[in-house]
Length: 75
Image 1 (cartoon, rainbow, N blue to C red):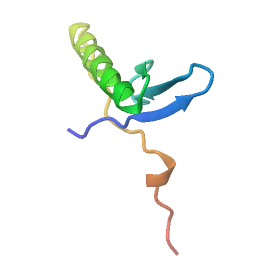
Image 2: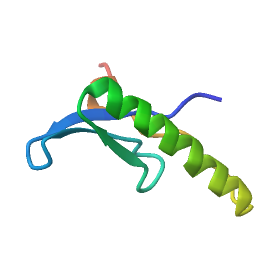
Image 3: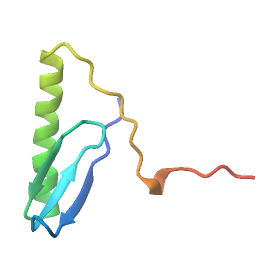
Image 4: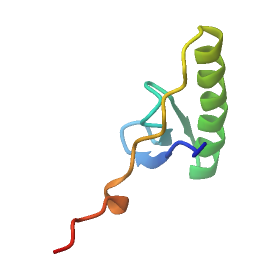
């Protein structure tokens, strides 16, 4: 299974780095550094997936691709 894409960005409003996983609804975390935000969102991802399994639901298939990875049809 491929892994989920993680976005990390700085939020001026919060004064923190935010990490989120677009394919996992509401799965995000924050930290003082990008590395801290990443570590926190990995913990959140594990909890998200465990909860999904306990509830008898299937984890979503990773689909999100940032614009940089989207291909353009060639002529």
